[in-house]
Length: 250
Image (cartoon, rainbow, N blue to C red; front, side, top):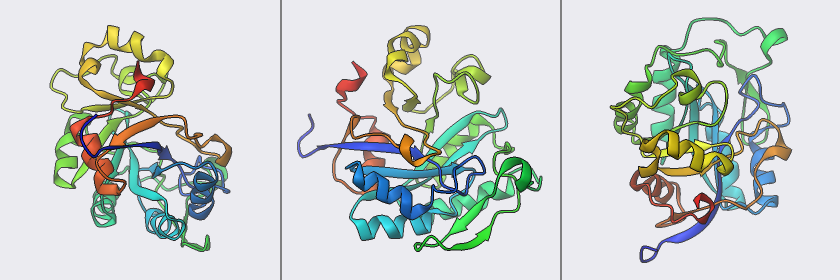
């Protein structure tokens, strides 16, 4: 273990009621409250192609004393899902504005896809997003790393072991010019098989998240990572250096 680093439990892929596929009980305050009940150390809000519920999420997390990161589950041109995490709300909201301009200009039909509700820290509705958030953007997968450098974030190809909307399901391979150093799985049971098939992953830190759309699906505190400090900046540092010392990977 690196000197001074600390082990924390985490769930870095959560959806609120702003994602049209998210349950309406997934409000910013409810998400934080459930994470506190489950005694998680670090959580992140990652709605589809938006960070607009992150301001409320971070305010509630601060009140509860839990470390929370603003984030987004970006959908690339190839319909590959990528978790993007940030150390500050300012960087997240700058990226939010960029992505919204690159999202397909198709209006959400709530009766078909569900509501896209923006809330404040008291779980009061303050607005709704007009564009359908589960659409793809015109951002290519191979652009995401450079964008995260520009916006001070980190990219994590999402749920690589999922049969849809993952890098491996949609492209079938890891592009040889890839630069990401952290990857996400739904289950560590698939880790050795994927590393054998895709040696690139041998040099990656691998995490697992719930991708929760319902409160009950938020992870229990069973998965851990190492951070230099228990702050959003500390989590970003750990992810950028791809240091985990995570027994769950082995």
